[in-house]
Every structure is written in structure tokens, then in C-alpha cells.
Amino acid sequence: MTDVTAPDLHPALLPLAFLLGTWRGEGVGGYPTMEDFRYGEEATFSHNGKPVLHYRQRTWLLDDAQTPSHAESGYFRPQPDGSLEVVLAHPTGIAEIYVGTVTGQRIELATDVVVRTASAKEVTSLTRLYGLVEGKLMYAVDMAAVGQPLQPHLSATLERHSSKE
Image (cartoon, rainbow, N blue to C red; front, side, top):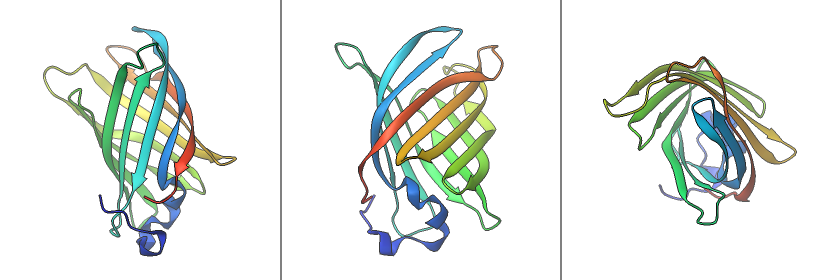
């Protein structure tokens, strides 16, 4: 993705401008079907002058080996009516399409569609909540998967590492 400075930001992205940059921090995760865990994360939101944010993320376990854990990539697509569409893909064979809202520096999303390959685990729905709180990007992800109802799965606090994306 080409590095484009803020003056080249498409006007449709102004409500999402607070996300721009690279964020790093730590989070916690768990689910009834797995052990609780702590992880490190790096997430980058960038743009190329068009009305879409490119998002890429990677995590690693906070163990002695810093074992790679997860990654996802996608696009945040603000709509003329003020809603937000988000399309994410995972190397585990899952793709998610979210719809939601941006209110100030808070984003609320819920899946409209979750699809998977034959070898991917069953995930039926997710919600994501992002917010900028005292300069830190915080988020929570709830998930319904493998026969379990929608419930907390991940949460993290990230600090801005760079702002020019």
C-alpha cells in the first residue's frame, strides 16, 4: 500500500482518520474450547487516497518463544449513509463481512456474513467494538463458534507506534 500523507485522505475516511497508523500492544483471549492466553499485537490502518482503509494485523503469544498466533487483513469501507462495512480474511480459511456504525471515535460492528473453507473451524457470528480512549486504541471481540453462543473472546489495548500510513 502506498504511503499517502493525511492531506491526501479521501473525505469519506475522515470519520475513521483516528485509526490511521500502526498500533502495538497486548491483549487477552479465551473461549470455553481453549485455554486463556495473552498476546502481543501489531495492527496497521493505511490508505491510498481512495475511500477505503486497508487493515492488516498480526499477533503472537506472549510466551518465551513469542510464537506467531494469528493474522487478518481487510478493508474498512465507510458508506454514504454513515454506516461502515468491513471485510476481513484470515489465513485459517475464514472470511467475515461486518456492518456497523462509527460514532465519534467508537466503532461498533456485527457480522452480516461469516464464510469458511471446508477445513476451517465453525464460526457463526462475531461482534467487534473499537474505541479510542485517552489516545489508546482499545477493542473487544465477541464470538459464537463451535456450538458456543456469542460471548467474549478477545480484548486488547494498543498504543500508536506511527501515525503516517
